[in-house]
Amino acid sequence: MNALVSDAELRFRLASLLAEVDDLWAQLERANERLGRIERHKLEYKQRVQRHTEVGRRA
Image 1 (cartoon, rainbow, N blue to C red):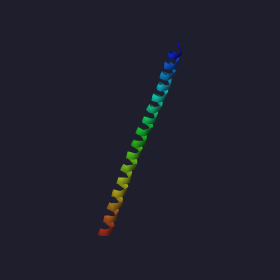
Image 2: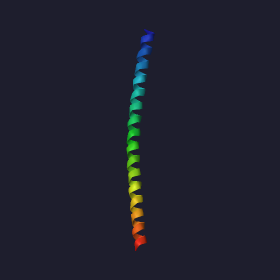
Image 3: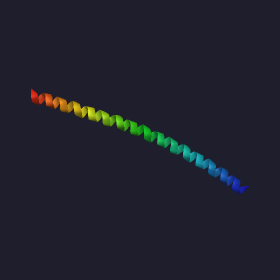
Image 4: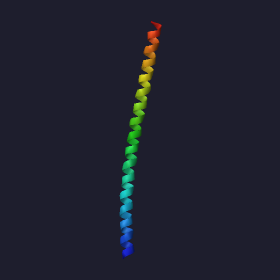
């Protein structure tokens, strides 16, 4: 019986850890999406600044 209790406890702990890993993975995916948006905005801003600078040079 002791082995069964230990096995059940192990399975419960493993399930908890797997759920935590799933949650952390989802957080990581969301953070990567946010980082991608930030990088796109940064690139767009850099391009706008470059265009503005080029227009200023022509004037």
